[in-house]
Length: 149
Image (tube, rainbow, N blue to C red; front, side, top):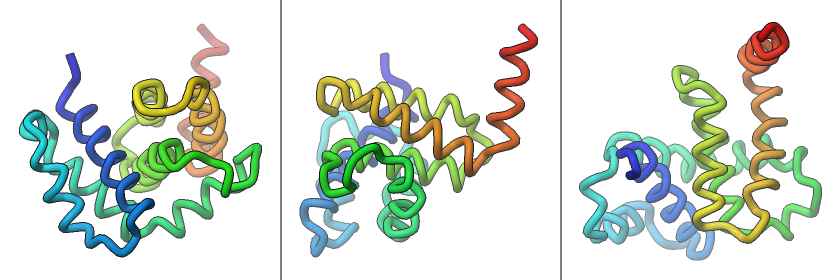
């Protein structure tokens, strides 16, 4: 059973993907298109809107945060995986109240659903490195707890 937050993230990823392929399409039209899905009412609408519009408004900055952690040329990253990582990068930087393992795990699960065969591994690697940079204190605290356990 998918949570409302998972559904919101999935719809946001679909919207970011659509925007990547149709950059001239207004965000409001993308949102309208996604709302037509029968299951959209089960999504956390506020989270969906915050992620979708947050990423679309700040995509170049979020991309600059991600690219240094790619193990390939940015042009070779699939638009699906890029959409997932943009979503997670937004949450890592804009939602400090959501633990970074939750954000990364959600991204991995969405990559398993929508991405290529091993796309979730790439997404995981990039986001782990990004989290260590943008949430260094939180990541260090998690590592310390794991070592002590």
